[in-house]
Length: 535
Image (cartoon, rainbow, N blue to C red; front, top):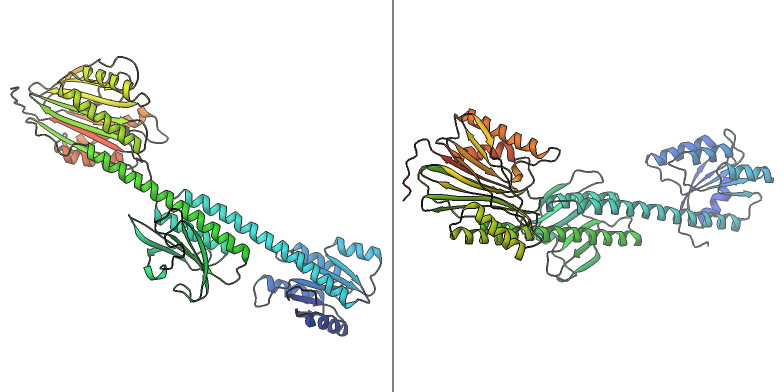
């Protein structure tokens, strides 16, 4: 006995007696043998096995050199030239072609070993065992390399996912590709609840559905972080034995679950499945952490915005704030509206950066702004003082802000713009920008310069953050022109701004839908008949 697990072997020889002897030796060793008498028969059997036509592909071919139709040298050459059978080892045997030149030709044209008759049975079996060990080791290494390559590809794909359903779809498809068959992946988040994605065959379209608790109730980790692999007979997915992975990147979280059919699994596959579980669990945890930070930032951001707008006789005011899409970071966009005796003070701004920190900086800046507004300073003086505060207490931060003060009785506006997108005056079929900007807040320079103009009855002032202007592939000026065009189109469609609430909604729908940034908008319209006492 050679100690090699049994294999499927094809014996090709035109002599029935010689075939009988060789197949007897191989069968006594436990191998499963198929016979062929000609080279054409042998190639047909090999092609059928490569095409999965019901014939088990051989792991090794014992091939006589002298065949009646095609000589063994050419048969070996064709076997090695076909990518489907190139890895199958070939042993040449011959009673006549026994010279060195024959052996050289056989080995050169594809044979992996060459035995001259009379053949010793022990030598044949030893040669078969050696070639099978080498072939199986190579196949195992190639299979593992392929699975590790697909594991790396899957890891890269899931780490680019922006939502749990997308991540689970990519993970299930990746697991199916890694192991070449069915797979199911399940995880949970506060936003989606427990979700599962099942792929019933490699390449199948994955389906996302709510996960049933009884399918994933086993947790060998008992709430701890780590990865556990175990076998499970039957199961709710395919009715066959499966291998399960339960993985958790952080203690106390809902775990990640993977299940794949157990058929054909080896120890290398167990390690790959563990690594896949770890990779997916880490990606799920990163997504959860991001979602938690984003929810915190959005809660903070929204809590800092005015809960309601003050009533202002003679003026219609509307505001909009729309957070970035689910896959974008939270920014620091904000607006402010304050009514004082005979005036409106309005501001819109944006903290540089996109993160929870940007939202907290926005809160600090807004509180500072309200404190200086309480002192009833002009816009230029207010921004000058706010800039000094930032230079002292927030020296690493940059903020854009447009601050204005409107005299209600006359419509006169005093405005200071610290690096923010210019406001637009809308009316009489046009939308023009209000130019004149000073440096961004956080820059050590003077910020008290003001622009003075009058908002006429029927005119509106539109202030926005850069989420309504900037787009990938477009310059800032092109984005501003796009906004201006949308404003003019809105005027033409409605015969003026009219209902400022509807005007804001349509503007967001027409201009803001393509943005992946936060968007804030403030519209102030002076009604056509303004009679306001300045008391």
